[in-house]
Each structure stands twice: as C-alpha cells, then as structure tokens.
Length: 394
Image 1 (cartoon, rainbow, N blue to C red):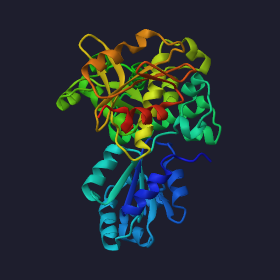
Image 2 (cartoon, helix red, strand yellow):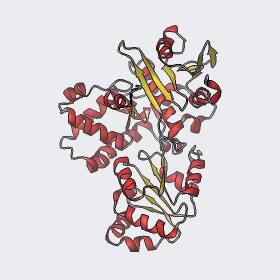
Image 3 (tube, rainbow, N blue to C red):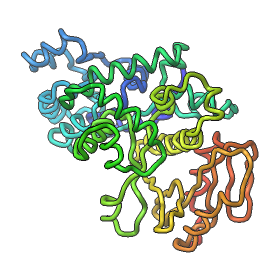
C-alpha cells in the first residue's frame, strides 16, 4: 500500500482537535487513509441506506453506539449531524473524537463553519502525488498524464478507460444532480468536455456559454459545482491589489490529468506525443503537483498566475511571507531562451528573491544564471528550494 503524505499531519490534527475533517474528490483515498491512521475507530458510511436512515430518524441512538468516537464517511449527506457532533465533543473534550470525510466541499464546509468552527481541523486530500507513487524514479511523463493519479488505478491496476468512464458517469448521475437540477444532461457533458479543452487557459465564460448553448450565469453555476466536487481548480491571477484577484479572470485546471485525457477522447498515451494540448496537460500536471505539496500538508493554496497587459505570462506565482516567487512551466525537453521571458519581466516588477524556477519536460537539473531548472519529477524539491529563508535577499 502506498503511504500518503498526509499521514503525519492527520495524526497531529487528531492530537489537537476534537474533530478532524477530510475532504477531497471522490475516490482520492480519504476512507483508506483514515482507516489506516485510526484503525481503532469504528467506521460508518452514510452511503449505507440503513445507517443513513438511522442517522436521520434517531440521531441520538445513532451516536450512542460510539462512546469512543468514530469515522463517519460522507457526513455531508446529513447536515443535521454536525450539530449533534458539536454537543458530543463539547461534553467529552476528547481530541480526535470524530474523524469526518466528505466529497462535496460546498455543503461540507458550510456545515462545518456553522456547527464545528474552532472544533475541527480540515485536511484536503487529492489523488496521489508523483512523489507518493514514484519517489525518485523517473517515469514516462505521457504515461503519467494519460493514467492520472487516482489511487484505485494504481492499487487495483484498473483499466484507465473503464475507470474514467465509470467515474464520469457516476459523477454525472449522482453528485451533480444532488447539487443542481440539470434538465439536459447532454449539455452538461458537452460543458465538461469544453472545460477539458480549456485546460491551462484563461477562462472565457462567454465563449463557453455560446459553444454549449447556455447562459453565462449557468456557466458560473456549473463551474462552481465542478469546484465543489474537486473536479476543477481555478487559479487566480496575481495582483498587488487583493480585490483584483477576485474580479479578474482565472485560469482553469483539473485536479487530475487522466480525467482530462478521457474527456478529450485521448485513447492511449502515445496520442499525447502529438496532441495539440499536450503542453497544457503537462502544465496542468505540474500545477496540481504544487497544489498537492500545499494541501497534503494541511495548508491552503498560495498559488497564483501572472499576466500583464501585453500578454507576458508566468504560470505559477508562489506567494510567501517574504514575497512572491515566479515559476514557469514548459513541456519541451530542450531549453529555449524564450522560456525565461516572463520570469525576466516579473523580476523587474518584484524584487527580493534570489532565484526563479523552470519546470520542464527534459532530463537535466541545474542552475542557469538565477534560474533553478528542474524536471517534472522535482516539483516538491523546487518549491522547498525557492521558498526557504536563504533564497531571499533579507
């Protein structure tokens, strides 16, 4: 079994909070993680209709069975339970009493903030990171992009096509219809496919609305649903003015590249070699790896992108307590001086950091002038190198 990066932080959370809440996409390994970390706790899934019925009709009886706490899976299905958990943990004052999981972060987080504010630590668990699966080994990047990182594919050696077909169908039939009333499911399917084609690009809701035949408010509603279910991630733009980060357009990414490939009808990894979106899918992979570095440690995202009025762009801006660090992403295997253009322009606007970064599809790892150049297996290494205290002119 592959050990998760979040194991240690999950234990620390349970030692200091009465409730620990784990959220993330379906099948990202939440249940496996908590059962391995807390084997002594009883496990209950509210997907079970018998358990769900008891929790709804007689919540006091439901909780009376757990004098030593429990792991409750998909707890957001019954929001009223959060109030009962609040009462129990306030009375018992036991750290790590309840471990909760949920895959719909909007409903989940709303219920947590209403009933368990100050009582729960929150961890977001995404599919495997490269480091979790391969460590220091070098694997073919196109195979990785095509296969994605969902745990079941690796743990059970599942067929990629069958897995993602089932994942999409289950998501459409179950999660989406729980959140919004979609009359024409074919339009939502088309919308999903268009989003996959928009990977790594600045969102244009008007274009998407026109292509699907829906309104712009519907586009925003559906994007929010995809975000709530951890299907997509919107990377906000970097501005000194914080309000602008909320008003300017975001870039669209998926949490898993295997899902992108399925939605784009890519049938095997060899097709990625000449696919027009290979560069964007590679970029998506790197962005998601940076996200995993943060989220799997129990931290919030501190990532943005930069684009000026002339179209000069930097793919990732890491915002730290010292300042902001730029990182460029290129799928090419040969270094081209044009790769550094955006980094140079950003460097004239921001000062303080000693090195900027380039993640690329090649083999060598070295420093060129003030650029740290790393291959796609070294995302974590680059984050740590560029954000450590010694990397700043302070």
